[in-house]
Image (cartoon, rainbow, N blue to C red; front, side):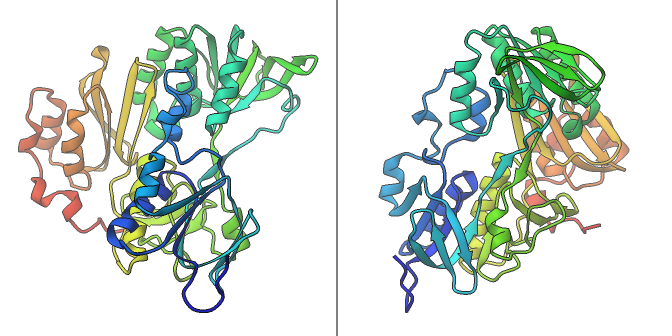
Amino acid sequence: MSNAVGRPDVDHLIIGGGPAAVACAERLRELDPAASILVTSRELDPPYDRTLCSKSYLRGAQSRDATHLRTVNWWVSRAIELRTGTSVTGLDTAARTARLSSRDEVSFGQALLATGATVRRITCDGSSLAGIHYLRALGNADAIRRDVEHAGEVVLVGGSYIGCEVAATLTAAGKRCTVLMRENTCFEHHLGGWGGLFLQDVLEQRGVRFVAGDELERFEGGGSRVTRVVTRAGRTLAAQAVVVGVGAEPDVRLARGAGLRLGDTGGVHCDAELRTSVPRIFAAGDMCEWDSAAHRRRARVEHWDVAAGQGRAAAANMLGGNDPYTAIPTFWSDLADWATLRFHGVVAGDTRIERGESEEGAFSIWYLDGDELRGVLSIGRDQDLGHADRLIGTHLTAEQRAAITDPDADLAEIGPQPAESVAGRSPPARV
């Protein structure tokens, strides 16, 4: 397929099949109607909403097709070529050619790397026993659903998103679930103690058991299948199935092989405009480590909304733009139909103020660094988030802080108004 002389085979090559890739392709087509665009994805399924793997798709409430981010007709109608089941196995950044798993070689004008992340795997005694699962893809969710159909006890290793979401989904389906985690409260690394304590209480009230402040030592089995989880402190947990959710690693194998610079967190090093160390090569999504104004440092964030936003921003810069990606990070998580958390901004500082009543299940937590608002967690008070976006990055007075803690106060009356909001201001100075 390679065209060594003259015009490249494709103007824009997008490597990956997640939200960053889809958003980039969509924005490129809007901005460049005549360009040729090729999207390659190693998965057999077309790009889908991975967040559903631990929720509605896992419990069988949603069909496989319903998880797809775009229909087949969407790709065809926009003349965007999508190759599923196709990996880019090598990238020559000097010649701007990509070698595909199909043995084709494609020349390109510029490229976006959006290769995502891979699950972090555990290696300990018994880790190869049957019944131990990791969750990243639709196929993983299929395997878990089949395997737990007749399981009584399920152990979740890890107290963050995968562990808690899967525990909620399987408990709602009638399984007895135990979450084993190093942290003292679930979501501790992401939300701090207050939000995590509330969500852990929600799960415990529905029957989820937590073993906190402990960690996995080994798996034991009867024959070739796991039957027990043994902790470092010597606890033994019955388990007819195990789901491990201990984080993910940025997939930088292609980037490393191509000689792109990697960052301190292991992602691909990018500037604020999502450019990599090689001209005309951009990155977005889980494997992108960029100069983040919101974090005031280089950051890598594994959240669906961030990946999609970066894909759109990268598209504009691939076409000659010079706009830094400065959007406020957002993420969310559903725990069955028991609670939904939404977070805007970043967790920073050691001051937290609460709006609403946690006892009533409707409150928000406002995270301050000194007197500067850095992030807001909402559980049942999503109306607060629009005001949060307007106020994040501002220094709050004592009166404003008092208004936030008063659930009857009108937040629209405090702080900068929409025309002066954070989206229109220069990003805060980096530290």
